[in-house]
Image (tube, rainbow, N blue to C red; front, side, top):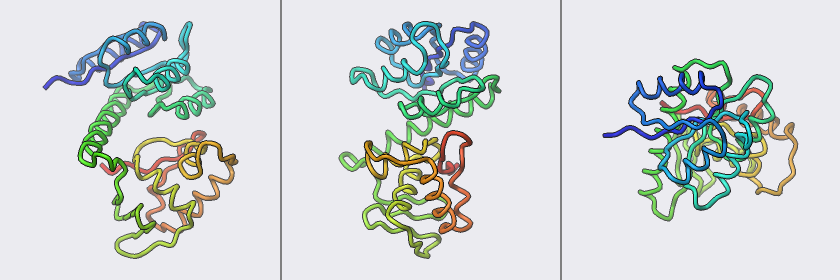
Length: 238
């Protein structure tokens, strides 16, 4: 069975070759592009399963590439791992809010990058399988992770069979994170999932909600992980 097709976008030839070498060694099919314009052309003409995208590119930068592929109906839904330099924290937040799936900072370990690639491709496969099983019901009513049962139909949470009393916001924050374990959510993305895109919220209010949620989950609160400077994620159940 052929491996997935990955597009690498970076204007530094040595980084392109480093990533390409490691991906090819793992059996992936690889296409490389040195700028955002060429990346868009590849995405329009080839079937790409995942893109590794540098944010600092000549011409169209990585954020604009992400914006275009996420806002163009003709382009398929493609997972994006952003490559970032130190000090680009604000760009990471913007990229995640535009729809990127993960990020890794330069300099990086090829082993860690490969682990991120495998995780996102596995997640994509599992999500596609769930969607095909559920047809019109793409959001699963019940989620169970690490002994936490979340029932979205009855607004009920149990830990090892014992009920947990959550507020409306706490429940929906937990549900949003648990539906995509391993995904990094910015604070604004969390509130968009709970209240809608136009709800104005401060970062501090999200942090307060998370503190309360972790406290009510007790020992299981550790599965809500802080991604420093970015936001939060629910630990992936491997």
